[in-house]
Image (cartoon, rainbow over all chains, first blue to last red; front, top):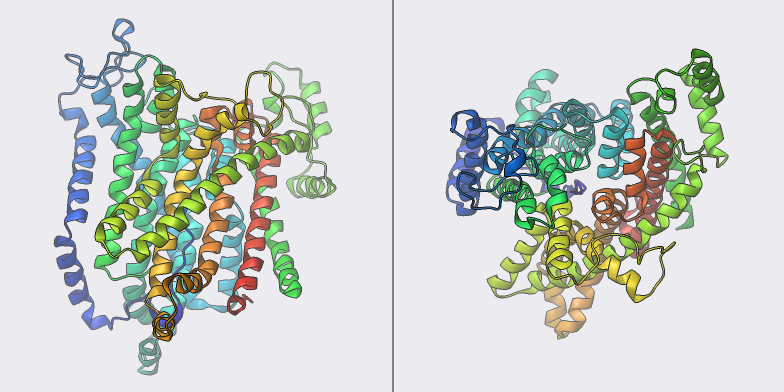
Length: 302
Length: 317
């Protein structure tokens, strides 16, 4: 769950592929070809696609009502007739809740990273490209957030703001802005030093054109790869907040929250109590492997 | 060396200032009035006003911040709304328990990671490398609070070998180094060590691999040095990078043990923080966050200085 410190190799520009703008399309085609030949990444993509698709289509899959409680059908074991994965502590169908749970769990994991990517990326690229005082200001503010262990920051913010999905999204976004900003800043600083940026400026290109064509074209890859590596952390962290009772509120189906409420059942039906965690684990491992595959395919060293 | 440490320390002052601002803001992020947490909603208005005045919540925010900062700097972190005891006392005793757990987890995670990571980097066979990489992948992907529950299910519920919760036997007041206490530590330590184990194994493996491909290693081989002597050289060169990541991981363990402490009811800072959040005990929330952030900053500084001691090339401005 700990966010790995962004340590891009600055020596010799090994962290960034310096691609002249004209070759960019060829590069992305190459990335696509490499990805298609990577069996591990493909399998993970299929598994994730299945989880996402079933979560999105959950209301139309003919599953039991995930909110319908039943006092007499509580804690049915896995493999019961009509309840393939059993029922939870309030008699709700587990299979249905696990599939429905994917909606919130995935949403709560992916959204903060996307928001942080937009905000942190913008800040980092600005800091890297402008340099000087602007850089100082932005990066020193980020240093303040870096003074907190990431989990502590997320929990303290959520704890102060109170439980609820919106507050979790907000606090997780705040947690992920600084690392993304730091990576964006360091790759942008690196790209800015390349000769082709100097050449573009000498040939009369405006600042906006340089940023759009030369800088963005070269920094987006590494930033994107780094951001995808944060998704698995975000999913675990979001589930963790719900597990503590700081995230999604009951009775919504969400994996972290289900893990929390099923804790009382570990003496009665241990297998059942462990199920929601299996979903978190599976999703997180797939996102990690996808991110590794993407990194290899995009030839980004980070 | 000492001068460098001092420079880094001075650089931390503005950061620490920002940290204090953020921690102060925590209270005002909270919905409603900070006072509403301690008085019933039907309390007479005079009482609420009196309490507001007592805690200083009636002043404008910058004044409140200034006062809070001065009082905090003098070592007074306020009193817990829940227990009425001084915050510093509460945080202090909990902090010790967290440190014990964190040290255990660090020892397990780092020693295993160094062995596994080095073995994978040296491995000629792909199986060893694959195995180690898989272990590392599981370490960084597993939701550790779920692993904690699984450990309890297997070792406490099913096998009955180890206790499922608590610091030690019943009525134990503090931690002591004896078998019953260590027995209580085993499961939380394992659960806490998986993330740093995963992260460190990856770091050690990639760092050692990179160093092994450097020319000086070939030169050492050519000189006729044996493998064990070369390993020493390699590890010495891998140390700075690994140390930096270790420092971060150790800090994250201390700040991140809240989920594990909650599962095992381990009376550390995380457990304290969790209780404070649900009792709306804002002074404790503030105090714990501040102490942990301060510790994290100092830890990072120490690692930074040790790093330059090991490898003087990497001094930062």
